[in-house]
Length: 496
Image 1 (cartoon, rainbow, N blue to C red):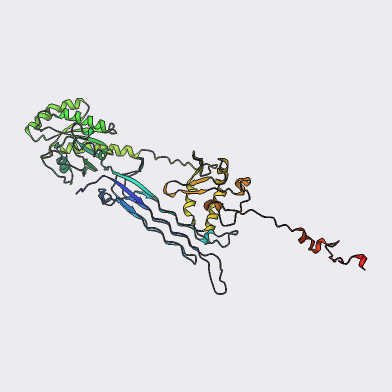
Image 2 (cartoon, rainbow, N blue to C red):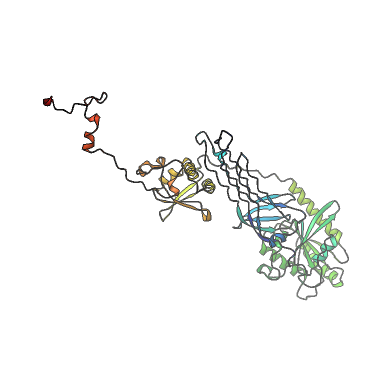
């Protein structure tokens, strides 16, 4: 079973916000005391935090799906729902977070550094919060928003100051064991080191960390051996120490060709060209090793490298090598301390930014996009006619109605708000403000919206007219002055 994992996939699902409450205060002798429904609680967030006690991403390898708790719904008597608990996930120092498109979102360095992986949904407003001078007793509440769901990729890049690179069995593990308290597995066969090892080194007053990565061989950039899988752990290092094997038993190898091959593989990986190189000629405790080191040391110095003959077994030359590493670390830290702080640039939203877009599709439908309108749709309870009318009022006030009319939408056009699983499709029925000429006699009752339920069928209006006989029987048509009615005598004058 794997004990070291440095690349995992995290499926983070934040908690859903609680629904708002619809409640009316009832007291003795006062059955309708006004709305008193509370708001729903916020859903829990998922937060990554750097923890010094965590050194691997193994927990995420076994449990990649993480979900925070949801907030509870609101209650009557002005009581809000409880918040969902945040889910805190510890990660190693040096964890890099990427989204599903490969964009880097965060580089977590330093104990206590946090990153909001997924944000919990906001709770819905209760009818108490929705009440106003014009809406005295709302009979609806807003639903809680769903929590954010994200697919993230976590990569661990070890935070080390010095990196040891070289061929398999060059003595890198023996060297880190000799200069620090790290105890990696050491054997006389290639690829003994399968995972990076970290060691803390003390040289005078300077303390720094050293990373030992699995060995490289020719063709590692094409995936041979262990490939370049673990070179991400040396990207943060100040300097690279080439550990060259001077006591190899292979006749076709020597320290100079080994250095050229390793440098070629590092160039294939990229991003390490500006790192300082130091040469450690290892295994000088062997007779052949000392002779080989004497032969190649001057050649390497002529190439511009600092060369230190060492022996991890006898500890010869280790002090000079450690202090050379310490000088590079001190220089890098001094330069980093003088760097200017990054300027924070604020880019506020433009004043004329409507916050939504309307696009006419080829099939005659219209798509409405925007964070605000999508959030409003998610908050609407489509089983409540008054809530639907409230959504229609909000969209009209935002300007969605006018924009649809400008794009050519007519009564009955298909309008889509949102995208994916959260998309809502309905038939558009314009209001008076958007286009009165399209109403064609359609009625709109307050608190209801036909655009989300389909067009209402309005019966043809019939004018009630009196017949001639009915008119003859009306007294106001048989008197000279209708204001002082006095019936005429039905007896003809000649009969009197």
